[in-house]
Length: 247
Length: 322
Ligand SMILES: Cc1cc2nc3c(=O)[nH]c(=O)nc-3n(C[C@H](O)[C@H](O)[C@H](O)COP(=O)(O)OP(=O)(O)OC[C@H]3O[C@@H](n4cnc5c(N)ncnc54)[C@H](O)[C@@H]3O)c2cc1C
Ligand SMILES: Nc1ncnc2c1ncn2[C@@H]1O[C@H](COP(=O)(O)O)[C@@H](O)[C@H]1O
Image (tube, rainbow over all chains, first blue to last red; front, side, top):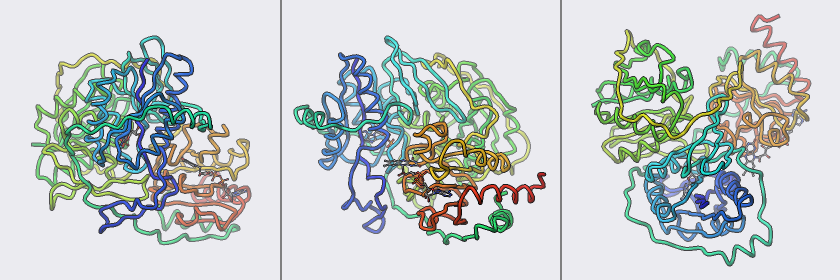
């Protein structure tokens, strides 16, 4: 069993979002980078849980990013994983990133490729589906559970207003979200062990960027809250009914 | 040349989000001066021809029961066939569960630029630029699509459904070579009788301020009265006070209802990330300093256990419920 987990760096969830260069660049200077929460909590931890049940399983991590992605992929390696690959490139275009991951994936002949549901910065929810198509693999998105049954995966995924269970033969690409795995934190032993685990840096292959970011903007500021006294909920109901017209 | 819109009916009915995408796609077509067509997969659950009222002229129907459940890879390949044979230049999805599964694969298959999470019509004054949400709704990016064929996945609740067209759509049955699906659906579990959170116009949400699961009665009563779905903050779901699928926020579901009522929720940035696209936000919290008030349109500083029952009584009066 060979598992590839796609790891992206993301700005810490409390980061103040601001832009520079005439609103064309994210102000990343003071940003604390973390592992994209879906990648860490769900994709990576589920891979680790699977390895705990099957010691012969091998977990590789892959990230597309420049040197500033290194601490993040190291932290992921400290949680678990046998080897990490950093593809030395930076792009905000999903097709470009997916093309890089697909190249690494082809060479590794993985049974299972896991991504997070989405990155919390550019929120594409695209990479998984693109990598799957580039590799001609089935794609199960928004998974909340993943079990292995011989050479098949039994996956529970979100549908509108519920969930469904599906069965698919490996290899498969799965995007992971809440429900997948139990939370865990890296321990000192993991962090020490990770130092000796290999982190390979490879150069990107040629690939197109299909999109480009023209500019960013912040949402217009809210007008400010209208407070209603606690003893007068009738006034709130009136405002919602007559002013906001929401019911 | 045309705009092709994916009609999402794989779960038994045409979803509201899909009607939004349909209305949006018809408008995109109108702005480009081309026709709008639809594509539906699987046995038709509703009268497809009636979708003409949204302005779509023609619908390709791939009427095979194999496609009654989503298999992203197979759907991608079918829609690619339809898009190629119909000469679609822009392909529209809702950025909902099915759209997120299919659009990325289609982007690869057609080598067509994709923008997911779109919130506005394309700006074609200078190229083809679409505004989308980034940083979990905390900002927007204007994305230029730099290929001949383009794909847009529209965020739910960001474009109104408009039934302005007249007449019926011509439904053309479309036969495809693709028949096998690799993903076999073995069970479907839907929460019956409740409004699905992702489709709800009104959401009533509770946080840790409610102290325990036994106090959710008033939340449910308020939701029922308003025809709303219920939601919760992450610690509430983590503590198993409420089911996991109700968790909204950065790591839960992102929603954008017309009205979001937050009760006993502090308004942490990770929570706001999932609800800040709501049109109107009401906050009930006993702490005047709770950060949620900064993101709210209306608020009451007060004890939920005193305020909510009174609120329920007042809404009953307005709704004429005894
Ligand atoms: C990486 C990361 C991701 C996260 N993702 C999410 C996410 O997706 N969703 C999410 O919700 N959280 C998320 N969190 C957690 C988030 O930071 C907050 O801890 C959480 O939202 C707090 O939940 P709460 O508001 O219910 O509880 P609290 O912060 O404990 O707030 C309770 C509120 O209730 C009020 N209150 C108490 N009693 C009453 C009363 N009687 N009447 C009225 N008001 C009362 C209090 O004044 C307080 O404001 C995430 C955190 C991290 C680090
Ligand atoms: N630069 C990257 N390197 C490796 N994996 C990535 C990268 N960007 C995104 N991913 C993976 O793809 C998932 C979906 O990302 P996105 O399509 O950007 O929302 C993430 O949760 C990651 O698992």
